[in-house]
Length: 407
Ligand code: AMP
Ligand code: GLY
Image 1: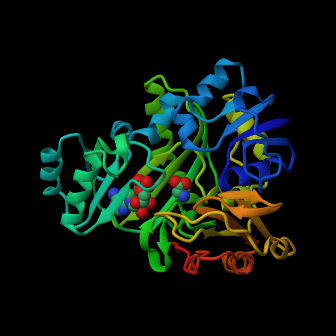
Image 2 (image 1 turned 180 degrees about the horizontal axis):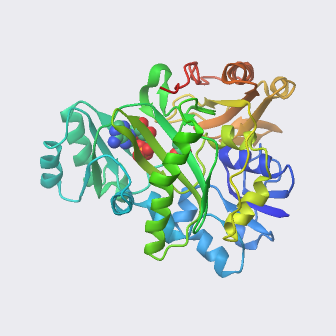
C-alpha cells in the first residue's frame, strides 16, 4: 500500500514512521528531517490512502476535495472537522449527545459575556471559538485577566476572527487524559490512552503550548475506564454527528478531565494529538496502514492491539517558544541519539541549511523512548533529549515523572 501523509510536524513524522513498517509512505510537505518528504501538493500525489495530519486543512475541506477526486482518505470532511473549528458548535454537539462537559456559554457581545463571568466559580476559562494553534485557551483565577481576555478576543486583537466569538467555561480541575478513537463513520475503536503536558514549564507552570511531552499508557485509564468513555462519550458523539448527516471517518481525539464528579470532555480534536501520536503510535502492535485504510473505507474491524510496554516523549522546543521562537540554529547531537537503543527522534519544526538540520519552529523535536514500563521509557527519552542541543533549547524535566494512577 502507498500512503500519503499530509502535514509537516512531529505527529506526521510519527505517522510516517509507523505506517512505514508495512507501507510505502510519502509526506507532503513534510520537513527536511522526515524521510519521504515531497513538495508535491496532496491533490497531485498518487496514493492508495491519504492521511491528513493537522486540523487546519481538514477544517478547510482537504478531505472532501480528495474524496471528490475518488481518493480513500483518513480524516473528516469540513462538516465533521467543525468539531475542532468551532468550539461553540462542538459544545452544542456534546450537549445534544448527552456527554458530560463543562458548563459554558458562547458570546459575540461584550456586555453579555462579561455578565456571564458572574455565573462562573473561582476559575475562569476563556476560549476562542475558532482555531488558534492550541493557544486560544486562558485558564485563570484572576477576574480582571479574564475580563481583559474577553475584550481582546471579541475585538479581534488577540486571535483575529477566531476570537470574535468567545466561549466561556466553568473551570474544572483534575488529571487530564487524551483518548484517541479511530472512527469509520459508524463504528469506533480506541487507541491506547495518553497524557500530555500542555504548559511550557515544569510543574505545569507558564503558558499553554501545543504540548511539551506525553506518555502512554496511563495507569488511571484502565480498560474499564476506556470502555466507559467509548460508551459514554465517543459513540454518542459519533451518533450525534450521524444524525446531522456527517459521515465522520478519522480520529476523534477526546480531551478529558477526571473531575471529582467523574470524567468530563474538555474538547474534541479531529486529528491525532501532537505529541500524543509520538507515544501512542509506536506502541501499536497491529498494522497502522490497515487500520486507517479500514476506517477510510467505512469497514473498521476489532480494536487494534498495543504492546505491553510504555512510551514517553520529551519535546525539545526553541528559545522563546511559545511567544516568539528563535529559529535558524543548527541542531547538535542527532548522531549520538541515533545510536541509543529504544529512542526515536521525531522532527517537527526542522529546516536545513548547509547540509545540516536546523531549528525552524517552536516545537523542534519530540524524542520518544520506549521501555518495559513508564520509568524505563522515561529514562530513555531523557537520555535522548539530553543529548540534543542548540542555543536556548527548552525541555521540561518532569514529563511522566508521576504518572496518574488508578484510584
Ligand atoms: P482545549 O484546547 O480546550 O483542550 O484547552 C487546552 C487546555 O486548557 C486543556 O488541556 C486544559 O488543561 C485547559 N482547559 C480547557 N478547558 C478547561 C476547563 N473547562 N477547565 C479547566 N481547564 C481547562
Ligand atoms: N497535544 C494536544 C493536541 O494535540 O491538541
